[in-house]
Amino acid sequence: MAFMPGDGQSGVPQFVDIAWMVATPEYEKDWQILERRPDKYSRNWRATLSEVDARAPHYAKRIDLRPIITPEIVARVRSNAQSTQLKLIITFNNDNVDIKAIAYQWR
Image (cartoon, rainbow, N blue to C red; front, top):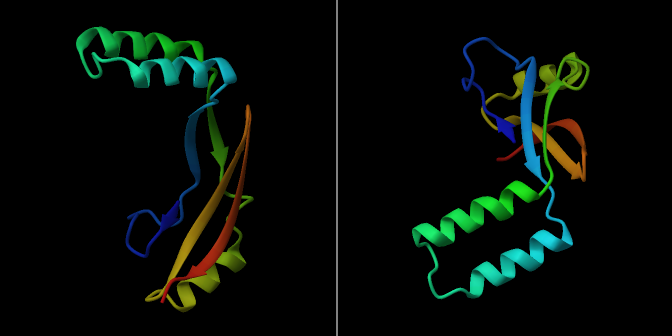
């Protein structure tokens, strides 16, 4: 996830809402069965897909970005706003999520 200068009118984001699903071995097995079905994308197939997705663990979390996006990182992004982004690196580990912020120079 990256934020370019001008993306938000209110400045630096204060929080981010994250939602993710963990693909369990059972989910992977069910998904492989769905992939091989001849009625792919039919109404019945989509209903079965919804059932398979519902059985997988889903998580949602609101992350406060104020301690992650430090004033030093914001200053580095603003010092070269033409070619630097505020980049958030999000790492998922089952029911946990970790976020790291960096000043990413893309040009």
